[in-house]
Length: 377
View 1 (tube, rainbow, N blue to C red):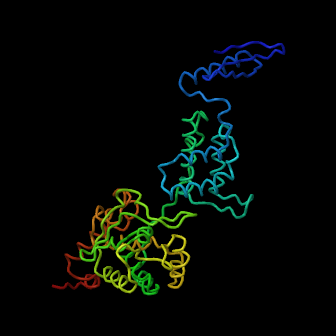
View 2: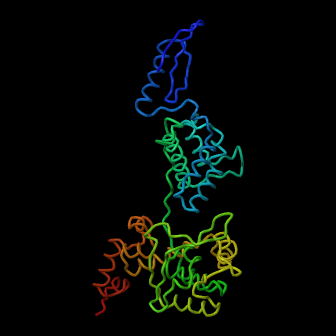
């Protein structure tokens, strides 16, 4: 029910009752403007896009916290990651703004501050990576999509936003010499860990959560079906792998089996015990970096090298010895072959390399023999 009535002061009063029976009114200088407003409200009701005028007054921070509490499908690490990014990169800029007041321009300004930093406001605020900006923007966009379904707002200000393009850096695996130096310089109690990482391509959480019963010493395999998760405020705990593809059985070379066997013998590892601990307790991700990894790579002289790069080293060996994309994908636990190719396509030999190798093999002589005109039989 709606109506338009002229007031004594000359204004036109337009009013309507919402689906709950509550009356809403606005005043206009012209009758045509009042009618246009009522037509827009009527259209939104008919199309199911009606939003209560006060629904968008809740702040982004308050609504986002409600939204976070409803995401029962999020893994503990995902919940912690979202909470951290909202607290550090969203709430300081948009958190106190009512949902309904945030415009696409506000979103563009906010993203620009994340991209170039906000040094005028705080010299400590540094630019963040384009890939991280895309992730944060996706979270905020998801919050607004939920707000639309909850009839809090009529539109998503994050739609059609142009995001900074991430700079693609080619993976450069560490050399065998670097990996050997890391293994030889590591403390005895963790040496087998680094041998396993370089010889299996397992992720950090998979290795830290590995128990002896997952290793088949007779068949020389390791089963990966869970990981150790570190969340602020909780002791590290086991959790399932993120995707079905991450659950896999990896064949191990004898050098890895020998290192693991010696580790089990030297440290009395029981069948259900974690293979690697710190002072007898599970190793959290931050503890691993602070007390084990960073001091080790600093000693070797490769500060800045990430533990994850031992995984790249393993992948490069598989590729070098002719394994297919499908095999590399399966060994690393990638979700699909496209992920494998996106990461390592540049490491596979191309047509030029194959041409050179084929001619070299056909000629049967090294390059210097060809240049001198000699040929071996």
